[in-house]
Image (cartoon, rainbow, N blue to C red; front, top):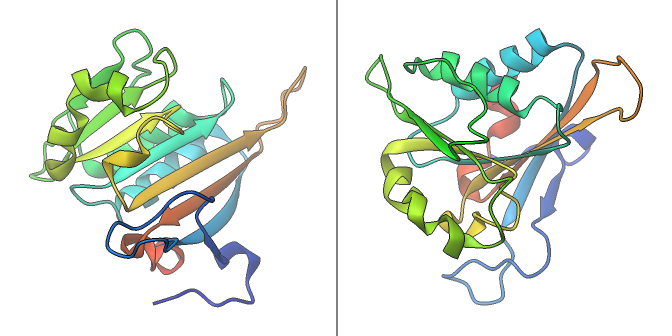
Length: 189
């Protein structure tokens, strides 16, 4: 079901130029965009728990935002919502962590691609393509590096005030790319 076109928070927009659907040469997959305001780390973690309710094995979630924007806090909420084992912390120095499910759901594979160069080639050693069908794969700093893993994916862009500020407010933009995410707005309501 497509979101209403009159709501900016549910606007349907094409994916950036250059992306194509393999079954339809030259076609651009549609994306559903939802923008939310989060005012505290607790709300960011709660957003993660809410998102976890709509995630399924095979989902690729790409997180983008400045250092300290809340990517790992959101992922911590995803882990809680998915019912996975272990504390979800930033995998900066280990690159990837696998959190098995404690509730017969999908595992959470949490990747920090910040220290990796560009492209899927450098990520191949992580075997994300093998993990993806049975897991929810969350990649921080994944733009330009993991898009080829899945035609359908969820991009999460987190914007925060920069500079010398204690402003906790974040604008979180969820961009569901592909048919899998057509009901994203309704699922978060």
